[in-house]
Image (cartoon, rainbow, N blue to C red):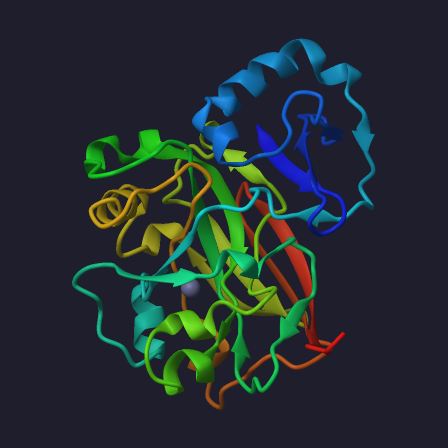
Length: 286
Ligand code: ZN
């Protein structure tokens, strides 16, 4: 099943993409894809309900904006340097344990929303990533059980301001949390749709030119390891997002460095998780 949220920013409604490719509204079944939806076995209940109701549901026009496919997760946890070549291009040693950091949930945006270069930014960069969405409360989970806590997967661009992240002292969170820095989607693919999350091609193009092209088989720490590992330090809550890290080919790794400028077009995708297109613009006061 493919879950979407559609409509204006902050007023999104829940929907699904049916097997025939049509988008349908499911707000008569559930108010939103939030913590209580996932916690309450919502994916299974929605799937059962669709078997008899899908044909009757209102069609959502393809021109309507998509929002992030999860409503207000309690947290976004990102994994740093989780592809060997990306660690090398960042001049960083291979981590012996997963590096984790937070991204503010207020950074979430729709898959095709503009990337907004924040005020005083000179080094806004791209990072295509496989995102994992948690389906069940997880604490001290074993690796062998970890996938039972996953609701599904989505495409994520972990937008990063490198000066804020690396040159302004302290934690990476400063460079990861500006508004629009977490475009997610087009949809959340439930776990059953992705037979092997560790064999997915992922790619990113800048103005039509391929910058990143890799496969999740190159992850240093895979999905069960990450879910188990993070759950040793904090409760993972339904709807929480874990972004698993980016492969090589980011602007920071290029010689000379190449950062986003207004008018750039970023396009990205992952096998089975769709594609997204984001236009770059600068922040403006309202
Ligand atoms: Zn990242």
